[in-house]
Length: 413
Image (cartoon, rainbow, N blue to C red; front, side, top):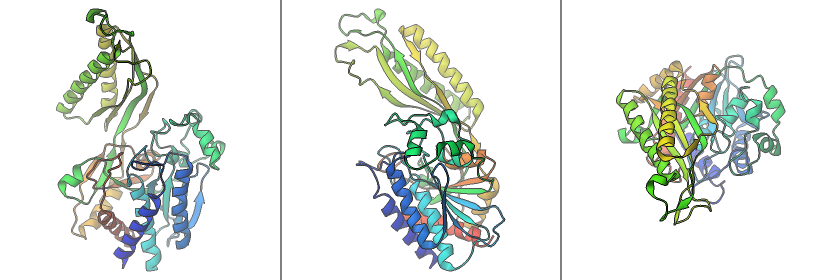
């Protein structure tokens, strides 16, 4: 009965949530948009039908509480987010939310009260592609969002985070006064954003840490526009060739750091030479780009940032260009709860499962909760088409299996 309830809840909610999107391909629900709010309402309706206690904070994060036997003990918060990247997939964030609702459903329908309160937690604005701020909703709930971050502008509208929050009924001033939720426990179900679990044929794994990152979101190289046939090579200040040199140099640096046994990922995620100034017969005088450097070790991030700066100096001298990096944003590498992870792994063994412990390359709300002193852990679900694209894949059966393990973990606590 429990497995059937979990499966039906997962399938029903995924269908309802993913019916809410801007036109495709894929799924688009911008952070602090009416579409994100509509997806939250799907969860509210489901939670109301279960009789859960529903609240929203000043940042419009959603909490649906199922009372447990010990109302004074630290609650178990479980959930994820419902915003997406532009033209993203069906499962990034949504899988964790529907898994949380399926867990609550299993307890309610069985008539068994959990040992402590369970709080389905649906955060706002996890995807920092919209606002250049990490973990907006969860950090707001935790009292860790700052006034300058409230002035960050959304990528598509150019309007501030505070403006979008206020428009939807939030209270930016109250967010900044918020002392934050009392430390408790947080579990986040999420699709893996790489191929490890799928290649191993494993349904889910337990995440022991989340990479941090250094990002330059609005960098550019300034050269000199010239005639493509008239300007000799030695006289050119070609911005595109300069960027190519920089990319190749950073790729070599990445390989060298990996060869030393350290964790690192380097991505030039946007390269823009498509403005009206560019043309077939012109030497490019400008190119815009971003770079995203990630590692589980802050010392490595700082070291690679230094390597990046050194390579910039070389490229500027060799190509006669100017590199403007713009503002840097960063997130800290974060260790997640070993205790919670091993509790889940011990329960999985009763199902003849042995989930691996693994690192998350992407940032997640679970990291924000851990940084605020919570016992926080993630459960990754296998995904065989990558993430942040319309072809994200996940078997609902894997999510059902993971939720069954979580249900057993807390029903026996």
